[in-house]
Image (cartoon, rainbow, N blue to C red; front, side):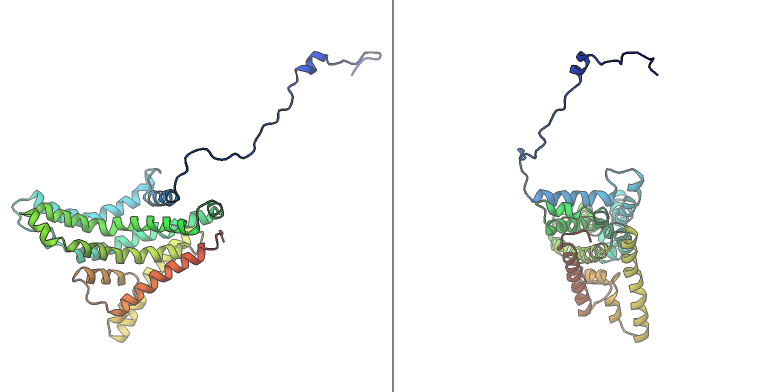
Length: 302
């Protein structure tokens, strides 16, 4: 407390002049002066990120265990039958004599379902959960380009599981043949059928998985919905087949139906699936794409 009669303290004028003055900064938006990349670069970015995330790339080591374990299991049969004639020259047998393409597709069907369930439906849930779709579509990126990028990424991922092992078997058969050039000339016609069979399986599960994933923003619901379809489907079709005593209900099975079509396309396998299996395949693929278009054409996170 000031003493009676004391003169109040005054701030020197020099100190007042040293106080910094407010400065206004020009923060107006300015036109981007860098090189503009084409619109396909945005699609390529979604493809790259869509492939990296399910494989655990650029993430911790624990995130890579499950996807690379499934990849190893998928490639193991093809690598094993190729390694036998390469490591044991006395064994005069072709890899395709040990396991052919339809058998390889059937063997990897369980691995395929596990890979799809844990990767494809959840490719769309994160952006919807974080509500960034409206930000994407507010730029020059359209909903079609967004869906196209994710769809191509899903196709590439499933091609690793379905097409990759068959290509390993094909190339390994060339390498182990007595006359590689002649063997390739005789079997080059198998390549279009290999690619076509893989496309049947990949398109089916990509359309189904992404359509289910687009209906929710929760990863657990997307994965659970896909598993419900591919696990309950065989039980129902098996029950109907047991009651009717006929084979046509298996054409409705979302697990084995595409595999049956693919093995027929490539030659041999699980028997003729019939026209109903082709109809179901078309309904799932076209219906899945329609669901994706309906969900994202509105350009919102809802």
